[in-house]
Length: 251
Ligand SMILES: NC(=O)c1ccc[n+]([C@@H]2O[C@H](COP(=O)([O-])OP(=O)(O)OC[C@H]3O[C@@H](n4cnc5c(N)ncnc54)[C@H](O)[C@@H]3O)[C@@H](O)[C@H]2O)c1
Image (cartoon, rainbow, N blue to C red; front, side, top):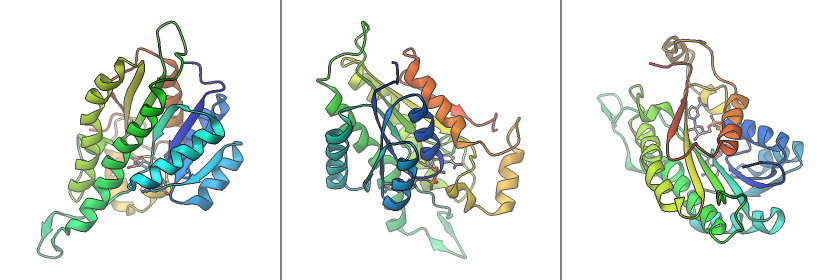
């Protein structure tokens, strides 16, 4: 699809990877709506690209419904959804020092990273079902989810985060199957280590260990490098139903 003039919703677009995606899509001519729980940061990120910011907790269905309705009222129905909202957690499932991993934080991570992603896919795609097709192939829109390479190969302490991201990877094919008859594609991106506030919470020792496991280049990725991949997925109609790793060959 040609991005110019289309409405795009980016969850978690206030910061980090989401902000990188917002910048690239805005430069390609999309009308941006950032849905984020950090409304102050979302407003400043949106202002920089002439977009709008809407307060939203992707783990809350009512909040999602209201946010998508507000975005649609201002920008029109979104043809592009990029789910970047996510949270991290690092804790062993059990150890003498910390005991059993509590259920509350497990549920929050799964609610935001997995259920939130699926719920936003549901709301965005419902609004796309009856839109006019964009081209002779019958395309109506694209949903792009940000998972993580933790879905395939996570270090210790990341069982809950990895499970939430593996859920997003696993959902990609059936989501694409559900929506193919409407001309809606679904793709997932699995990043390695990227330079964002979330990754900055990791201690230097672990960051160094992780970077040494990348083949080349051994540096953190930049959010705009994910933005470029999002742009390509939007523009390349043959990309559907799969997960692309962007990780400098992490092993
Ligand atoms: N940075 C990395 O190295 C890396 C690697 C792999 C995957 N990821 C994934 O990329 C995504 C973006 O991460 P990031 O590194 O840019 O983090 P970040 O903290 O910079 O950005 C995350 C954004 O999501 C928003 N958010 C969090 N919970 C929310 C909720 N419940 N509702 C709405 N918004 C919410 C935050 O306010 C923030 O703006 C996450 O899903 C993360 O798991 C990041």
